[in-house]
Length: 298
Image (tube, rainbow, N blue to C red; front, side):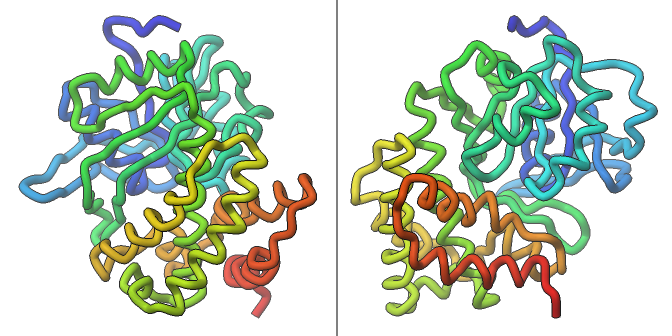
């Protein structure tokens, strides 16, 4: 999968994460075509010291797409994968690499119905970005992606070379992906309290987080991840050091009344645990609450 000198790049789902990647590409002179549910003339991404405006428009009708692309970044939520299938059919050719900028550890299987698995490239996103009330995006740290060491990864490495979004390639992608999943799982506690990262300074939330992480860690290791016990402390300390007003995408969705990615971020712990005969008592308590917060009724 060799990247052309002038690759055709598309971005599907220009939310906070997608807009950040689009801005990184545009700043380097590789402006992607933008596609999504909501029309915008442009995208604004601000950060400490500046702002990047990505020209649009964001196209909203897959029937109007007249060409396929060499690389498609998919940044829709896991709750929107089926709805994105029409877009994928229109955007992707036989050699298109689909880089999934999405939470969870199941990207390849989730997209298998719509794209050949050898062209699906999962990623781990390592930066906080949040959508503001004016539809701009606030990038709160340097953007970075981690990819598995596959031929498809080189397409993304080439596309993002010399941009503000750095890319790491690793042979042990499963461990990195599960480490991020553990971080996302604990962040899900914000949904149940309606609070941001400042809540992790409470000793009782710290204790609950570590108890939950111990359960998650056992499942992660059973799934093939190589993670030290210190990771649990690192994750909690990371939340405790974060700005007190730092949120997470699943909390933003809850506040906006949107469906939550509870299954891909938290439910997967219980599902994998049951498949391997591992007890998950904390998950058994948390999941019904997260599911009800997402899907109701009430």
